[in-house]
Length: 332
Image (tube, rainbow, N blue to C red; front, side):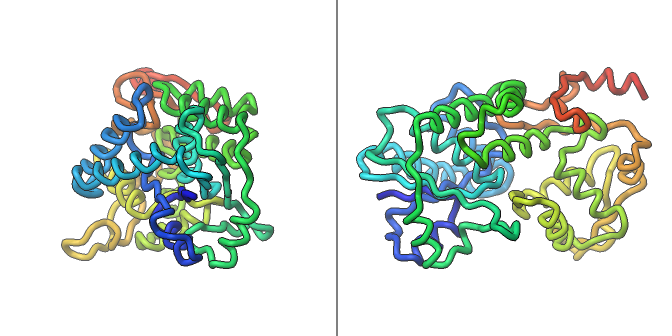
Protein backbone atom coordinates (compact mmCIF):
# COMPACT_ATOMS: atom_id res chain seq x y z
CA UNK A 1 0.00 0.00 0.00
CA UNK A 2 1.31 3.43 -1.00
CA UNK A 3 0.23 6.61 0.83
CA UNK A 4 0.60 9.91 -1.08
CA UNK A 5 0.31 13.14 0.91
CA UNK A 6 1.06 16.85 0.74
CA UNK A 7 4.56 17.11 2.21
CA UNK A 8 7.03 16.11 4.86
CA UNK A 9 5.03 17.11 7.96
CA UNK A 10 2.07 15.04 6.82
CA UNK A 11 4.36 12.15 5.90
CA UNK A 12 5.89 12.25 9.39
CA UNK A 13 2.42 12.10 10.97
CA UNK A 14 1.62 8.96 8.99
CA UNK A 15 4.93 7.38 9.98
CA UNK A 16 4.26 8.19 13.65
CA UNK A 17 1.04 6.23 13.27
CA UNK A 18 2.98 3.14 12.26
CA UNK A 19 3.01 3.37 8.47
CA UNK A 20 6.41 2.36 7.08
CA UNK A 21 8.43 5.34 5.77
CA UNK A 22 8.95 3.61 2.44
CA UNK A 23 5.18 3.42 1.99
CA UNK A 24 4.69 7.20 2.27
CA UNK A 25 5.28 9.56 -0.66
CA UNK A 26 5.25 13.34 0.05
CA UNK A 27 4.34 15.41 -3.03
CA UNK A 28 6.38 18.57 -2.17
CA UNK A 29 5.32 21.15 -4.74
CA UNK A 30 3.66 24.57 -4.46
CA UNK A 31 1.52 24.50 -7.58
CA UNK A 32 -0.24 27.82 -6.98
CA UNK A 33 3.14 29.51 -7.55
CA UNK A 34 5.12 29.60 -10.78
CA UNK A 35 4.62 27.98 -14.19
CA UNK A 36 2.43 24.90 -14.58
CA UNK A 37 2.18 24.84 -18.39
CA UNK A 38 0.03 22.38 -20.27
CA UNK A 39 1.15 19.94 -22.92
CA UNK A 40 3.98 18.44 -20.87
CA UNK A 41 4.11 14.92 -19.44
CA UNK A 42 4.91 14.50 -15.74
CA UNK A 43 8.68 14.15 -16.22
CA UNK A 44 9.00 17.32 -18.30
CA UNK A 45 6.70 19.32 -16.04
CA UNK A 46 8.82 18.23 -13.06
CA UNK A 47 11.88 19.76 -14.76
CA UNK A 48 10.01 23.05 -15.27
CA UNK A 49 8.89 23.07 -11.66
CA UNK A 50 12.37 22.24 -10.36
CA UNK A 51 13.88 25.09 -12.38
CA UNK A 52 11.30 27.55 -11.05
CA UNK A 53 11.83 26.53 -7.42
CA UNK A 54 15.59 26.63 -7.80
CA UNK A 55 15.59 30.03 -9.51
CA UNK A 56 13.42 31.38 -6.68
CA UNK A 57 15.97 30.29 -4.09
CA UNK A 58 14.32 27.15 -2.73
CA UNK A 59 17.26 24.85 -3.34
CA UNK A 60 19.73 23.52 -5.83
CA UNK A 61 18.20 22.56 -9.17
CA UNK A 62 19.82 19.13 -9.32
CA UNK A 63 18.67 18.32 -5.78
CA UNK A 64 15.08 19.39 -6.43
CA UNK A 65 14.99 17.66 -9.80
CA UNK A 66 16.37 14.52 -8.18
CA UNK A 67 13.62 14.56 -5.55
CA UNK A 68 10.97 15.00 -8.23
CA UNK A 69 12.54 12.18 -10.27
CA UNK A 70 12.36 9.80 -7.33
CA UNK A 71 8.77 10.86 -6.68
CA UNK A 72 7.76 10.38 -10.31
CA UNK A 73 9.40 6.96 -10.53
CA UNK A 74 7.61 5.88 -7.36
CA UNK A 75 4.21 7.00 -8.57
CA UNK A 76 4.81 5.53 -12.05
CA UNK A 77 5.41 2.13 -10.47
CA UNK A 78 2.45 2.30 -8.14
CA UNK A 79 0.05 0.46 -10.43
CA UNK A 80 1.66 -2.66 -8.98
CA UNK A 81 0.41 -1.71 -5.50
CA UNK A 82 -2.71 -3.34 -4.08
CA UNK A 83 -3.87 0.14 -3.05
CA UNK A 84 -2.84 3.79 -3.26
CA UNK A 85 -4.30 6.10 -0.61
CA UNK A 86 -4.28 9.86 -1.28
CA UNK A 87 -4.21 11.99 1.90
CA UNK A 88 -4.94 15.64 1.11
CA UNK A 89 -6.44 18.64 2.87
CA UNK A 90 -9.18 20.89 1.49
CA UNK A 91 -7.04 24.00 0.99
CA UNK A 92 -5.74 25.33 -2.32
CA UNK A 93 -2.18 24.02 -1.84
CA UNK A 94 -3.41 20.45 -1.37
CA UNK A 95 -6.21 20.48 -3.90
CA UNK A 96 -3.86 21.41 -6.73
CA UNK A 97 -1.53 18.61 -5.68
CA UNK A 98 -4.50 16.25 -5.59
CA UNK A 99 -5.45 17.26 -9.14
CA UNK A 100 -1.95 16.47 -10.38
CA UNK A 101 -1.94 13.10 -8.62
CA UNK A 102 -5.42 12.12 -9.83
CA UNK A 103 -4.62 13.29 -13.36
CA UNK A 104 -1.90 10.63 -13.41
CA UNK A 105 -4.25 7.92 -12.15
CA UNK A 106 -7.02 8.95 -14.55
CA UNK A 107 -5.14 6.94 -17.18
CA UNK A 108 -6.43 3.37 -16.71
CA UNK A 109 -3.01 1.81 -17.28
CA UNK A 110 -1.62 3.81 -14.34
CA UNK A 111 -4.15 2.66 -11.75
CA UNK A 112 -3.48 0.25 -8.92
CA UNK A 113 -6.01 -2.36 -7.89
CA UNK A 114 -7.65 0.17 -5.54
CA UNK A 115 -7.35 3.96 -5.41
CA UNK A 116 -8.67 5.71 -2.29
CA UNK A 117 -9.03 9.25 -1.02
CA UNK A 118 -8.88 10.74 2.48
CA UNK A 119 -9.72 14.45 2.57
CA UNK A 120 -9.30 16.59 5.66
CA UNK A 121 -11.57 19.61 5.86
CA UNK A 122 -13.04 21.98 8.41
CA UNK A 123 -14.40 20.42 11.58
CA UNK A 124 -17.75 21.15 13.22
CA UNK A 125 -16.25 24.21 14.90
CA UNK A 126 -14.71 25.36 11.58
CA UNK A 127 -11.24 24.40 12.81
CA UNK A 128 -8.94 23.42 9.96
CA UNK A 129 -7.55 19.92 10.39
CA UNK A 130 -3.96 19.71 9.14
CA UNK A 131 -2.49 16.39 8.06
CA UNK A 132 0.82 17.21 9.72
CA UNK A 133 -0.88 17.50 13.13
CA UNK A 134 -2.74 14.19 13.08
CA UNK A 135 -2.38 11.94 16.11
CA UNK A 136 -1.91 8.20 15.47
CA UNK A 137 -5.44 7.36 16.62
CA UNK A 138 -6.87 9.90 14.18
CA UNK A 139 -4.75 8.46 11.35
CA UNK A 140 -6.17 5.02 12.08
CA UNK A 141 -9.70 6.43 12.17
CA UNK A 142 -9.32 8.21 8.83
CA UNK A 143 -7.67 5.22 7.21
CA UNK A 144 -10.56 3.03 8.25
CA UNK A 145 -13.05 5.49 6.73
CA UNK A 146 -11.26 6.01 3.41
CA UNK A 147 -13.37 6.06 0.25
CA UNK A 148 -12.63 4.54 -3.15
CA UNK A 149 -12.29 7.11 -5.91
CA UNK A 150 -14.96 6.80 -8.58
CA UNK A 151 -14.32 7.13 -12.35
CA UNK A 152 -16.28 10.40 -12.52
CA UNK A 153 -14.03 11.91 -9.83
CA UNK A 154 -10.94 11.00 -11.83
CA UNK A 155 -12.50 12.53 -14.94
CA UNK A 156 -13.27 15.77 -13.11
CA UNK A 157 -9.72 15.93 -11.74
CA UNK A 158 -8.29 15.38 -15.21
CA UNK A 159 -10.46 18.14 -16.70
CA UNK A 160 -9.68 20.59 -13.90
CA UNK A 161 -5.93 19.93 -14.05
CA UNK A 162 -5.92 20.45 -17.82
CA UNK A 163 -7.94 23.65 -17.41
CA UNK A 164 -5.57 25.02 -14.76
CA UNK A 165 -2.66 24.42 -17.12
CA UNK A 166 -4.38 26.10 -20.08
CA UNK A 167 -2.95 29.40 -21.42
CA UNK A 168 -5.98 31.34 -20.11
CA UNK A 169 -8.08 30.93 -16.94
CA UNK A 170 -11.36 30.82 -18.86
CA UNK A 171 -11.66 27.02 -19.02
CA UNK A 172 -11.15 26.56 -15.28
CA UNK A 173 -13.53 29.41 -14.54
CA UNK A 174 -16.09 27.77 -16.80
CA UNK A 175 -15.88 24.47 -14.93
CA UNK A 176 -16.29 26.26 -11.62
CA UNK A 177 -19.18 28.40 -12.81
CA UNK A 178 -21.00 25.43 -14.34
CA UNK A 179 -20.82 23.43 -11.11
CA UNK A 180 -18.79 20.74 -12.90
CA UNK A 181 -16.35 20.18 -10.02
CA UNK A 182 -18.78 19.00 -7.36
CA UNK A 183 -17.85 15.32 -7.41
CA UNK A 184 -14.65 16.35 -5.59
CA UNK A 185 -16.40 18.28 -2.81
CA UNK A 186 -13.43 20.40 -1.69
CA UNK A 187 -12.43 21.40 -5.21
CA UNK A 188 -14.96 24.17 -6.02
CA UNK A 189 -13.83 26.37 -3.11
CA UNK A 190 -10.17 25.77 -3.96
CA UNK A 191 -10.73 26.71 -7.61
CA UNK A 192 -12.58 29.86 -6.57
CA UNK A 193 -9.66 30.72 -4.31
CA UNK A 194 -7.05 30.25 -7.02
CA UNK A 195 -9.10 32.41 -9.40
CA UNK A 196 -8.90 35.13 -6.74
CA UNK A 197 -5.09 34.95 -6.99
CA UNK A 198 -5.28 36.55 -10.43
CA UNK A 199 -4.62 40.32 -10.37
CA UNK A 200 -7.88 42.02 -9.40
CA UNK A 201 -9.47 44.50 -11.77
CA UNK A 202 -9.72 47.33 -9.22
CA UNK A 203 -6.21 47.16 -7.72
CA UNK A 204 -4.00 44.88 -9.81
CA UNK A 205 -3.32 42.91 -6.62
CA UNK A 206 -4.11 39.27 -5.93
CA UNK A 207 -6.41 38.56 -3.01
CA UNK A 208 -3.42 37.53 -0.89
CA UNK A 209 -1.56 40.74 -1.72
CA UNK A 210 -4.57 42.91 -1.02
CA UNK A 211 -5.22 41.11 2.27
CA UNK A 212 -1.65 41.83 3.33
CA UNK A 213 -2.12 45.55 2.71
CA UNK A 214 -5.49 45.56 4.49
CA UNK A 215 -3.90 43.97 7.56
CA UNK A 216 -1.46 46.89 7.64
CA UNK A 217 -4.14 49.55 7.11
CA UNK A 218 -4.65 50.34 10.79
CA UNK A 219 -1.14 49.85 12.17
CA UNK A 220 2.32 48.55 11.27
CA UNK A 221 2.93 44.87 12.00
CA UNK A 222 5.91 42.62 12.28
CA UNK A 223 6.19 40.21 9.38
CA UNK A 224 5.39 37.29 11.67
CA UNK A 225 2.29 39.04 13.03
CA UNK A 226 1.22 39.84 9.47
CA UNK A 227 1.59 36.18 8.52
CA UNK A 228 -0.60 35.17 11.46
CA UNK A 229 -3.20 37.81 10.57
CA UNK A 230 -3.35 36.59 6.98
CA UNK A 231 -3.81 32.98 8.07
CA UNK A 232 -6.67 34.06 10.32
CA UNK A 233 -8.42 35.59 7.29
CA UNK A 234 -8.42 32.29 5.41
CA UNK A 235 -10.90 29.57 6.33
CA UNK A 236 -8.43 27.14 4.78
CA UNK A 237 -4.88 28.53 5.09
CA UNK A 238 -2.63 27.64 2.18
CA UNK A 239 0.14 30.25 1.85
CA UNK A 240 3.49 29.37 3.42
CA UNK A 241 5.61 32.01 5.09
CA UNK A 242 8.45 31.84 2.54
CA UNK A 243 6.01 32.59 -0.27
CA UNK A 244 4.55 35.48 1.72
CA UNK A 245 8.00 37.03 2.20
CA UNK A 246 8.52 36.79 -1.57
CA UNK A 247 5.19 38.55 -2.22
CA UNK A 248 5.92 41.28 0.33
CA UNK A 249 9.31 41.99 -1.23
CA UNK A 250 7.55 42.54 -4.56
CA UNK A 251 5.09 44.95 -2.94
CA UNK A 252 7.91 47.08 -1.52
CA UNK A 253 9.77 47.19 -4.83
CA UNK A 254 9.17 49.05 -8.05
CA UNK A 255 8.34 52.63 -8.92
CA UNK A 256 5.30 52.69 -6.63
CA UNK A 257 6.14 50.80 -3.41
CA UNK A 258 3.00 49.84 -1.49
CA UNK A 259 4.67 48.97 1.80
CA UNK A 260 7.92 49.79 3.55
CA UNK A 261 10.03 48.41 6.35
CA UNK A 262 9.48 50.65 9.34
CA UNK A 263 11.97 48.71 11.45
CA UNK A 264 14.36 46.08 10.22
CA UNK A 265 17.14 43.96 11.67
CA UNK A 266 20.36 44.98 9.86
CA UNK A 267 21.26 42.44 7.23
CA UNK A 268 18.11 40.37 7.82
CA UNK A 269 15.35 39.64 5.35
CA UNK A 270 11.86 41.05 5.29
CA UNK A 271 10.70 38.29 7.64
CA UNK A 272 12.46 40.09 10.52
CA UNK A 273 11.00 43.51 9.79
CA UNK A 274 8.12 45.68 10.96
CA UNK A 275 6.06 46.64 7.93
CA UNK A 276 3.84 49.64 7.22
CA UNK A 277 1.74 50.93 4.33
CA UNK A 278 3.20 53.66 2.16
CA UNK A 279 1.01 56.57 1.01
CA UNK A 280 0.76 54.77 -2.35
CA UNK A 281 -0.52 51.65 -0.60
CA UNK A 282 -3.08 53.67 1.35
CA UNK A 283 -4.29 55.39 -1.82
CA UNK A 284 -4.62 52.09 -3.68
CA UNK A 285 -6.73 50.53 -0.91
CA UNK A 286 -8.89 53.66 -0.77
CA UNK A 287 -9.62 53.49 -4.50
CA UNK A 288 -7.76 56.75 -5.07
CA UNK A 289 -5.06 55.35 -7.38
CA UNK A 290 -5.03 53.41 -10.60
CA UNK A 291 -4.43 49.66 -10.44
CA UNK A 292 -0.81 48.63 -10.31
CA UNK A 293 0.74 46.81 -13.24
CA UNK A 294 1.32 43.22 -12.12
CA UNK A 295 4.87 41.93 -12.31
CA UNK A 296 5.51 39.14 -14.78
CA UNK A 297 4.52 35.80 -13.32
CA UNK A 298 2.60 32.63 -14.01
CA UNK A 299 -0.84 31.57 -12.82
CA UNK A 300 -1.00 27.87 -13.63
CA UNK A 301 -0.53 27.75 -17.40
CA UNK A 302 -1.44 31.43 -17.85
CA UNK A 303 1.52 33.74 -18.27
CA UNK A 304 0.91 37.22 -16.88
CA UNK A 305 3.30 39.40 -18.82
CA UNK A 306 2.80 43.18 -18.94
CA UNK A 307 2.30 45.12 -21.13
CA UNK A 308 0.52 42.32 -23.00
CA UNK A 309 -3.12 41.51 -22.43
CA UNK A 310 -3.58 40.63 -18.75
CA UNK A 311 -6.18 38.33 -17.27
CA UNK A 312 -7.71 39.91 -14.19
CA UNK A 313 -10.33 38.90 -11.65
CA UNK A 314 -13.41 41.08 -11.32
CA UNK A 315 -14.25 40.53 -7.67
CA UNK A 316 -17.52 42.44 -7.87
CA UNK A 317 -18.87 40.22 -10.66
CA UNK A 318 -16.93 37.06 -9.77
CA UNK A 319 -15.52 36.56 -13.25
CA UNK A 320 -12.30 36.79 -15.23
CA UNK A 321 -11.71 39.80 -17.45
CA UNK A 322 -9.21 40.20 -20.27
CA UNK A 323 -7.74 43.73 -20.35
CA UNK A 324 -4.78 45.58 -21.77
CA UNK A 325 -2.70 47.55 -19.34
CA UNK A 326 -2.51 50.39 -21.86
CA UNK A 327 -6.31 50.66 -21.78
CA UNK A 328 -6.27 50.94 -17.98
CA UNK A 329 -3.62 53.66 -18.08
CA UNK A 330 -5.67 55.51 -20.67
CA UNK A 331 -8.49 55.92 -18.14
CA UNK A 332 -6.37 57.59 -15.41
